[in-house]
Image (cartoon, rainbow, N blue to C red; front, top):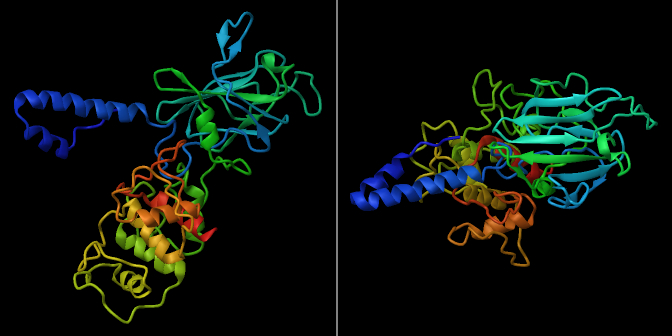
Length: 383
């Protein structure tokens, strides 16, 4: 992955003398490279966990990464063993392409890998190799159609829990590994801890209201807000797209809120410069309801990307969240004028944070995608 040097960086560099410019460039490049190195194993999903939990159902596990394995501690444990009953569904934790597969009945069975879209890779080892109700080693634990080169979606069924390989005497489980794009294995436990747990595997085929959100981790939230009329789509008049990765604007947020709360039309026009704005009626409605606020006293900034801190203020005004204990949940919002609302949103469980698995940051000034906003509305409305 590479990132261009932005115009703001170029301006900053041009302001320095040549000697300092070189040093500054080194610092900037270090920051950019570091930010790439810390990229989670799934493309950015904002306020949600960065991947799905590998198993659907009741399981238990502990952090055993690095523990001794093999005779005389000849190797270290490179994953996490997620213990669960045989034949619990195993799902892809992220979108990607099936890599290697070992699925030979009565032989080398049953494990596989998935190459994630962002270059990371996940391993699923010790899946089922028995026919149901037996320990005969004559079954297959890889789902039909799962073979090298096949594309899979996050949450899609890829197999079932078992005790194949050298797990025959250690209880049924899946040994789960995560590898960086350079092949380095990392401790998967924090990612598993923070992962979103499904109640059933997700369908492999395209479904829902929009065709462009099928590989978004927020796709079910998007369908839910479409079902209740909060969103109509992003490409009128067809409205068969949601534009999940596009930043949501303040005007779109006004429309979402008006629809979600079924607000009546306003009797007053609150801003003089939005007469040509498609969201003028929505803006006036949320202003009259006491939910809205401008980017200044005279401007709503309808087409300006919505910041996460502004989202917090809108939702707290709309749903009346409180923070009676005075909790201070995040370390990066001290300078935000909306810190109080950010904490109220966190206490209410509507936001988790922006840096899983730690989630001790809120990223207050970062803009929100339309997909992320869908998830916030689902949580706020308990859909």
